[in-house]
Image 1 (tube, one colour):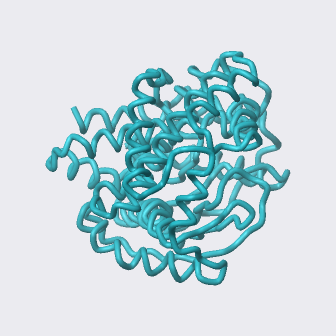
Image 2 (spheres, one colour):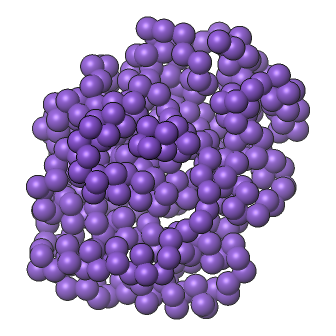
Length: 376
């Protein structure tokens, strides 16, 4: 086991992460699964970090080499490289960017419409607003308690499905940030921090159930489970998680689809999932289009045909995020790719394979290739 090489990789990532934070850029490390670490070294800048990773890749094989290449592709983009989208996402997220047929996206849209119709919500310019209006709105003061209560309700079901016994500690903070996200989780070891972006957030009782599964029992418990394993044994994989790396399809996919495995009869919750899953597939069409030089007017027209309740500026933000933001050009593909993988897994109703995947997913940060091997 090349744990010494693994440790060297982690040391470089620590130093690079410290550099990015020092210049006000997004961190490289989003969750640290180690139980303790030494002093953080220093890199002089991005070129130095790139050179160190190149040196380590020359010594690495297989999984560690692939993981290093995720960082090289992302770091290269930060330095100005503009890889074709398909190569960039394949090297960072570890998944091929084939997209989905127009007919498939339309079919998933019909499922989303049916889910809305079953709740008495018409499809049109006000669908999203009407859906949220039909639910119990939560004030900013009510949100943390609602999230914790929902997590407490679902936690036994998630632990039974995944087999994890790891403890976790959760802190909840609020923020007001001009960013696409409404909530974000990071942390180290058993300690996770959930940030709620109140600029974007409108929370209802149903969304509290959805977000508790996604962020708390998905990301927080999953990361704490990895940390517990890292404490118990010398794992071969890199013990820090980065959203631009090739485990993110697993992390975002399962977090989105978790209601299908533990709360399939919660009609309102599953309706949210069906709608959001469809929106991710439409987002993937825009992701491909804007990177294939489709014009902004054509992208806007397509998005409006697919999703009549998306405001123009929301669509514009999606286009710029997926084309000009280095991190999001990679990371945003993990959502549709992961959601589709886990939704289709749930639809197989193969309890043996589902149990095998979910248990493995809470033991190791699996790549798309490793997920495919389990399912095959």
